[in-house]
Image (cartoon, rainbow, N blue to C red; front, side, top):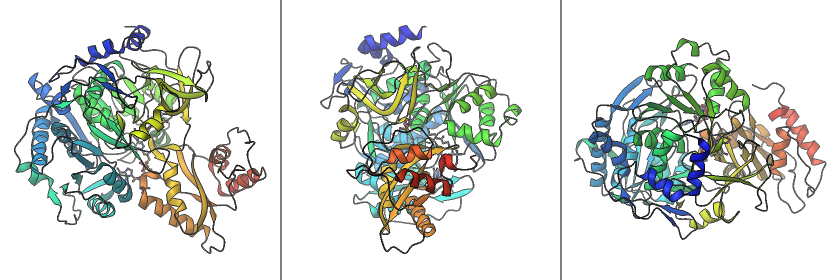
Length: 635
Ligand code: COA
Ligand code: AMP
């Protein structure tokens, strides 16, 4: 198949194209209406169709005689536990947990938060919700109680499903005290907390609302899947926006199932029965789409890995897993590869394993630097594919579609538009950019199936954030350009969102936390280059006059505060005290200028700056504190 023909067809006749893809699922009612414009200007796919996601991920495969196939390889180097879970076992676990949720009064349209480490019960919980039409919202374990409380108040769950603890390398992280604290902080009162006890000796504080996971499952009857409309929300996934409050991306059921199923084959080149591994976390969109729903929809064997690319126990873990489970296609973030490369630059560990099973290595989640891509290519000797997407899209928007036609890999580029995405680069005025000219990466409406349906309980934010900037187009928030051969290059966010180790975080949110310290008059938080994590946050603060606190004490307090209020995952480690911040004459802090100076990037001096002399002051502070590219010795 030729990519050009395939892609053009998806844009020329989206309804016909996606109707054919939808036929690869089993529907309770096949849609008669393929595409409808939604009142907010977005799209509703397959609106009058009915189906159930959990049925498609499990029961469908049992009916076709694949109950004995392994659905999940669970591999936890941090606890030394491994398990092979077949599709039949998955069915038993999910339908009984769904029965338990039903007994607790949950029904279609209710919401449930899943706050869990990377254990099979996290997947059971997601699928059990999908089974009943309960809308789940998975919250990444690295977020602090305050962040969890924000999500509780926004999605108002009936239950929270959690576990006794997570394990971070060798550190035990108790989850239940976090959940209790979050419930205490939230205005919304969650009815029940279901706790899976991992029996790792962690004390679980008892509360009236507690329900033991195992008792619930053991005392409940299995229930069957509930048929839902195609546009019924499968989940809400919170992601960082440009304001301090995260936004709840709402995903539909039918469009998402159709898009994911098709992507497994066309984008990733996997067939039913293959082993596919996305080394991410169920708390991120990659986990939702490519640890859980995508591979299970496609009857693949997915890998649930509870560990890190290094230190669990060393930089060979990824290679062991690929070899042990005969992984055909793997997906990870460039940060993970950089971490491995740092520990094992020559790739000696990799040579100890038979990796002949691996056909493609995919990378995404952050910009992939050329050195990392080339190292991976050289060491693995297979196509290494950078591809680009977001929580909002739910599945890839740019890629080298290996299942359609593998094209030459151009390091630095995330490839070509994926079927269904009419990707355009626009300038500030909404005109198309020329070849090589950097602009805003946008997608002509309608977006294909699987993309965000709305922002939970906040359609205004959906319209303002994505549809308003360029009428008729979805605005991605990323900058980029296209070369003469059509390859697209993503240059980074054009807003206050940063990407730390492939984790999307809002500097505006961190800035709010820093600014709330009583000693601070004003501050700026922005992302600077980090050789390992891609980016890391840096804070600059001006003290209130008369404040006595030392810079070092203040820094410690702020680091602790960000950790307490956002979470360890923010990786906020540095705060510099300065006399003043660069501003425009109208008083706007020039964060981009601060970032560009730290990264030693070329920058125009804004004509609106109120005092040019401050640039030298900033450089002097960076030099003294070894900041960014002013650091004498980088990693
Ligand atoms: N629960 C609790 N805490 C968590 C957590 C979780 N699920 N995930 C991360 N954290 C904590 C870590 O323990 C660490 O805490 P510390 O400051 O006390 O050490 C902090 O959050 C930062 O974690 P992380 O970003 O993972 O950094 P690290 O230094 O522990 O590890 C890497 C560095 C490169 C190995 C790691 O970032 C990594 O594996 N990156 C790849 C990530 C990835 O796959 N992203 C894909 C998203 S698509
Ligand atoms: P998230 O919503 O957490 O998946 O983060 C999405 C953001 O990560 C995008 O908007 C990009 O800024 C960035 N991103 C993801 N993949 C890539 C990639 N392949 N190249 C460059 N940036 C990427």
